[in-house]
Length: 295
Ligand SMILES: Nc1ncnc2c1ncn2[C@@H]1O[C@H](COP(=O)(O)OP(=O)(O)OP(=O)(O)O)[C@@H](O)[C@H]1O
Image 1: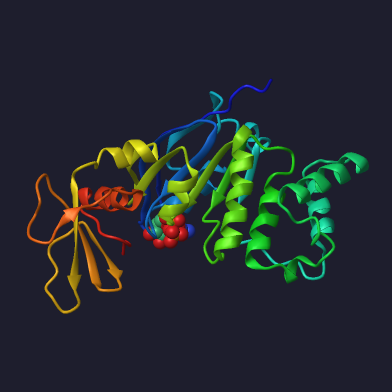
Image 2 (image 1 turned 135 degrees about the vertical axis):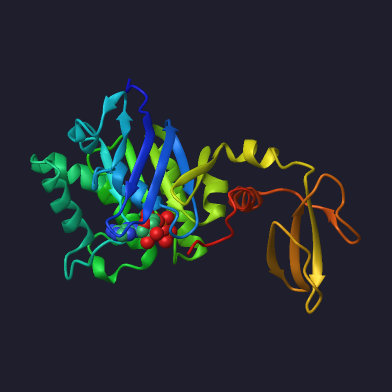
C-alpha cells in the first residue's frame, strides 16, 4: 500500500525584481485529497503554485514533501509531480493520443506497450477516448483542460498542482472536469488554485484563503462556514436606494443584496442570512483590510 503523501510549506517568501512581494511568509500543510487555494487576482496563487512545482525558487522558506526537503532535493518532488499550468500551448496537427504518447515518452515511459497502455487508460479516465484521434488544436476549452489533466497524470503523480482550471468552461464541462479531479484526489494530494469560490466549496475537503501573499484563513468549508452561523444578515436594497455598509453586495433581480455581519439584526428589512463560502471569503478579505480584487 502507498504511504500517504503530505506537503508542508513553512515561511515561504518571494519578492520579484520589481519589488512586488508575492509571497509574504506562507505556511501550509496539505494532506491527501483536494485542497483549495482561494484568492483574488494578484494574491500570489500562481507564484505559490510555480514555487511548489519547483519552477521558480523562493527567497526564503521551506517545502517538504513526505518530510523530504524539496528545495534541497527538487527531484524528489519532480518525480512525483503532475502540474497543470493556467495555459496549455497549441500543438498544430498532432492528435490527442499522439501528443500524450510523446509526453509519456519524455517522462521516461520507454517501453512501447506500457506507454500505449498508460495513454489509453489516461484518455479513458479524462473521457477523451472518442476524441483521441482528433488534432488537439480542435479541442474545446473543456476538452483541452481535461487533456491537460491527462498530461499531468502521466506517471501517476502523488502530487497534482492545478492552476485556475475552470475559467471559461461551460457548466457541463466544468462538472466533467470536477469529476476527473475528484477521482484523481482519491489517491493523491491535489492542490487547486482558483478564484471561483463555488469550485472550492463543492470540491475541496480543506482550503486556504490567500491575499497579498499571506494565508488569511485555513480550514474545511464546513468549519469556516460554521464559524459564521447566526452572525450574518441580509437585505435586498431596491435600485436607487442608499446601500448600507456591508460585508459584500451582489446584484439580484430586485436590486442589490447587502450581506452584513452583526450579532443582532442591523435594522428594518434585514433577515438572517445562511452563510456560504463566499461570505467567509469576503470576511477574510475585510478582516485583512482588503476588498475584492487587489491593485
Ligand atoms: N514575474 C513577475 N515579475 C514581477 N511581478 C510578478 C511576476 N509574477 C507575478 N507578479 C506579481 O506578483 C503578484 C502575485 O501574482 P500571481 O500571479 O502569483 O497572483 P495570482 O493570485 O495567481 O493572480 P491571478 O489570479 O490574477 O492569476 C501580482 O502583483 C503580480 O503582478
